[in-house]
Length: 421
Ligand code: HAM
Image (cartoon, rainbow, N blue to C red; front, top):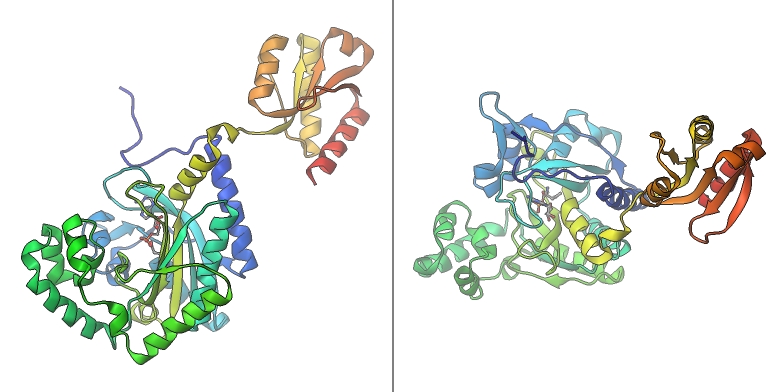
């Protein structure tokens, strides 16, 4: 019986991994431009960490976590809680007043798999700890937008403010009063959410709930003076940097730790999964997890969703590996020479391959093509006797002779390195 991968867990195959690396490399480059440092964290944490930060009544904690119940440990469903745990544990706030951290890796949520939604997925997660300046909010959204636009993706930015512990209770009371009046029309989930997490009713996907909340009180009209001016400053920052956005008063996010600015990068190209990334401010969270009173904000991009969008745009055929040279040796003696030659070339930094199984020229040329070889060096009996191989440029089909000795290899390696650099 064949053993298959778990439902919702995906293999990322050769070819696809090139695209993954491209996305990751660009993200690392942009994070460096914005002065972020990498932090690498464990996948398992104490369950309590997520329950206390994400919130006991969120979908994630209530029903989506992979937990070893007996050991009270959980496979991380997101990275923010772990970043903060490490930030507190290692006293990173003492080392720098403002820490700008990013981490890339797998997360786990037991959701129903569908296009753009898997049970193991990957996030690029960034956090700024130690500043409540509205410019940080604007800068983070600008960084996310820069990443998406340099990937060639056309994604919209939506933003909201969820207020703070001063102003949110007033909004909650008004929202509850509104929901009480309309409770019969709500879906079953929202009937339950009314008592556990009423704000989540605002972003319920059920058409009837969506209709009802159109008339609901707006959080933006309930913000206190400080939250209002913070929100205004965030928008000014975005305007100053030329970042387009729209306000979405229904966006509440699925994690409880947010306050003030929340945002999502959204698209209509992924079916029902519209968010490519999302985040927001979480000013009380560090303190709640036992650290100092330090504000924070961050966001995470979902790698699978970015890759799906890139594939829609670029198509699969562009995804093949590329090597510098394929050496096609015909016959035992030529193969033997090719075997040591490619080793010498690899030592000199050349990406080289050959057929190790004694196939004919036609089959070897096919292999070279599949490997995406820029050059093929053909060594048959005649070439071996003359001491010169035939070097073919696969793009132009031009051919020239290359000495089959150390000097020939060195010249080839140098020509490749100048092309590459
Ligand atoms: P989140 O909105 O839960 O936020 O996830 C961020 C992104 O991860 C989503 O926009 C989506 O692209 C991706 N994602 C989430 N679940 C799945 C899934 N099951 N399959 C594929 N992709 C998924 C957070 O996780 C927060 N920690 C973000 C944050 C950082 N807030 C502040 N700092």
